[in-house]
Length: 161
Picture 1 (cartoon, rainbow, N blue to C red):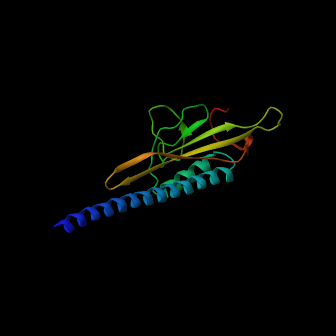
Picture 2: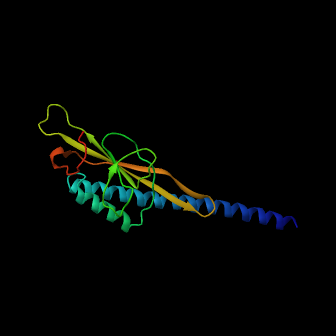
Picture 3: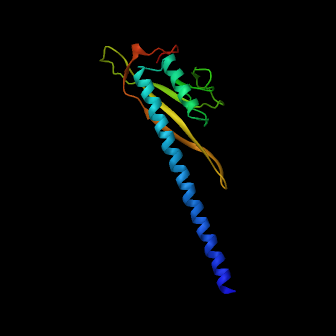
């Protein structure tokens, strides 16, 4: 009888550690996927030399094709944009109380001595995953920044910084 109780306890311990290991793998795989998607979004903005309408269309189609569905609120500020609908191929200025698929913040990085103003874009994507026993987790985000882009090539119709 003593061996049966000890075997049950060890089996429960092994199952618990297996669940922890599987949860860790799920988090690592989803984080890697979101990190790669963030890099691809940054690449699109850099190749199109700003957050143009073409870049927004490519980003939204890319995220939709890869079944990206995480939403969260963005940091509110001047030059902050987010997408509430991946089908519309548009972004809007960030407001409180709304959830966005991704956020892009336009930052003026030029000094007063330069003839041409330079802009960088801070891109934020969100990480969301569901574990069978533990439930839904969506509190993580991934940030990245583009290289400096000349201000004159920015095609987004919005208030300039």
